[in-house]
Image 1 (cartoon, rainbow, N blue to C red):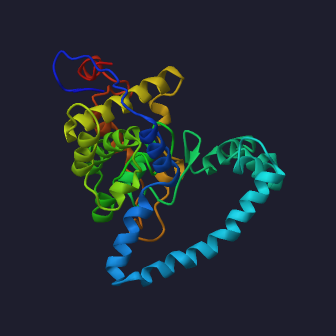
Image 2 (image 1 turned 135 degrees about the vertical axis):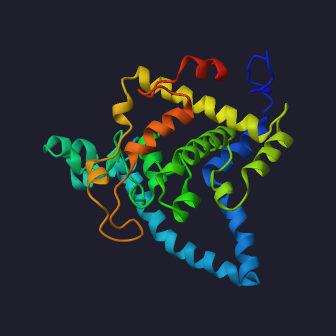
Length: 288
């Protein structure tokens, strides 16, 4: 999209990718850029090429794992990957996933999932921002759709989480749409530097504000799609255990998720009404 913030300009796609650029994008999506960033960092931190020993050890570990996956793929060809292997190895009920499995046996509250997708490694009671990110993610409890880590490691105060969550969601949506690996930012590259790289590689003007606006457009488009598909504010929630049962240990000991405070504030940050629907003025501002 060209100059998304320029008044009166209509958003449009500029197609300037050739064969080389397409190959580079596919390689970055398949492999990721993380190894190219972490290898120099490791060599610098460890003071020499002995850092490569860690990669060699990792190589020896992953070869057997790769052989297992190759054998599974050869034995059970077809789409579905690990879901097919789970179904064949453990039965169709386990392969249904925790949401459908617990619903079948009358205890849906036991599924630690949002919108059908299970949690990653983070507890929304100790990490209040991640809990809000799980609840509001357009594709369920995904830890790659918001990045409140720095805030969550610093404080459990729910009042600061809505803005952190909203901003990081917009930035991540923009990064994902660029074809760049999200771990570039996790490896220490600021969002502003990413904007500089995109500005250098693509026609038009690309500032941090431009990219955040594009990310916000993407997030709202996904929201509208979900609303038209039957989802609603009722789906922006967490399992009852996160909301009622205090964490028994760790930094969140004694806490429950304060989604009741964070979600209304998050809707206001997004320019949505109390039902989680983007307001008319929000859609007009985003030209949606």
